[in-house]
Image (tube, rainbow, N blue to C red; front, side, top):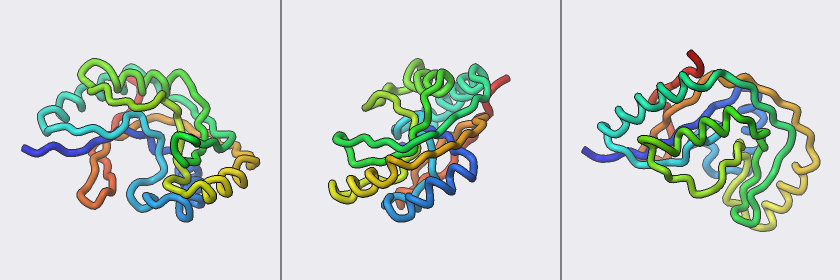
Amino acid sequence: MSELTYGIAIFPSKEIQDTANSYRKRYDPRYNKIPPHITLKEKFQASQEEIKEITKELNQVASEVEPFEIEINKVSSFSPVTNTVYLKVEPNESLTTLNKKMNEGKFLENQKYAFVPHITISQELSEDEHSDVYGSLRMSEFDMKDHIDRFQLLYQLEDGAWTVFETFKLGK
């Protein structure tokens, strides 16, 4: 049986997605592959058997974390590592806990970078484009809050698009 590529993410409210998409349409070549999201676990390979175990584990993780609020006040950039501009999700204990739990136990530890909660709004730009986009957005004020009560296990289709495999509700 072949393996699929999976990832775990939070999809914020429509309001936040609309704001992110207003930039992504222009500055993110992967705009049509996945809605705006907060990555909790980077993509990984798993067989059908492994994903059954991972799904059980995700149900357990979801039950251990209560719904929580997120806040977005500004944009930031991963430059010089990558030319990615993102809506900065203020770090909080619940997000950090979810990320940590998804990289231990039965989960493959595949985290390449420190966990920085964010929603990508531009990527794969040239140096100049990145400077322009980041320069103009850096001064913008964003005052967005959202109530997070679920996360999604996604899998990648052959064309590179992502689709929801299963949704996990937070809390008891």
